[in-house]
Image 1 (cartoon, one colour):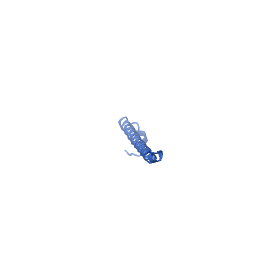
Image 2: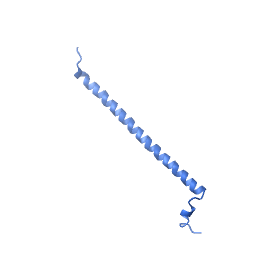
Image 3: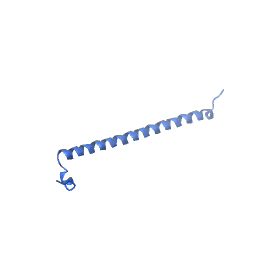
Image 4: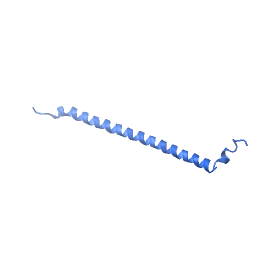
Length: 69
């Protein structure tokens, strides 16, 4: 039995579609990982800024008007 290109075409297109789905899902996973990483880095930098502000009294003048002696 001779196999024609038309008989192999559906299998080839399914493999191609599966490859595209796999690469798209990998790309989305990478994007979400980087987004979460950037959020955690920003949170870490924000915490450092608060520690600096409280530790060295750098922002006492900023909050002085809100607190009464």
